[in-house]
Image 1: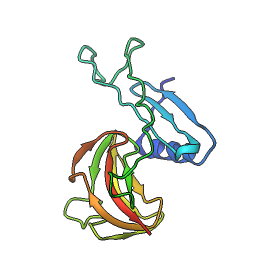
Image 2: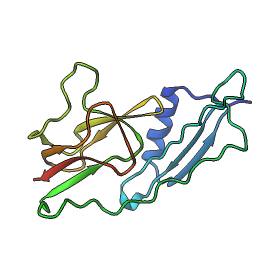
Image 3: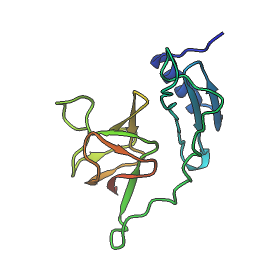
Length: 167
C-alpha cells in the first residue's frame, strides 16, 4: 500500500508533531520523504527535505529510490547576536530553508515594516517550503529595526531575517 499525503494532511501532521514531545520523525511515502527534527530546549526546528527530481524515472518525476542521498541537516547555529555596538537588538532567524514573503499575498500590505511594534504570537512573515506556506510568529514583544531580506528571496536555515529591539 502506497502512502500519499495532501497538503492539508501534511500540515495537520506537522501541527500534531509540533505540539507533542516527539523530537525526531521520519516518514517515507511513494513520492516523498519527510524528516522533522527539533530541539525542544532551543525552540522547535523543522527540517523538511524535498526529493530531487529523478530524470530517469517515468511517470512520477519525484519518485525516490533507495540510492538517493540526502545531505545532513545543517548544524545548529550559535545563538544569534547583534553586531557589535548594537547589543540592544535581537536577530529573528529563519527556522528552515524556504522563500521569504513579507505579506500573505501579492499586493497585500506587509506583515511588518521598519518601526512596526510586534507582539508574541504575531505573524511577521511567511516562509514557503515544499509548496507549504509557514507563518513565522514573533517570540517576543519589540519594534522592528531592520528587515534584511527582500520579498520573494530564498533564505537558508539560520539566516537573519529581521532585527528587533526587544521591549
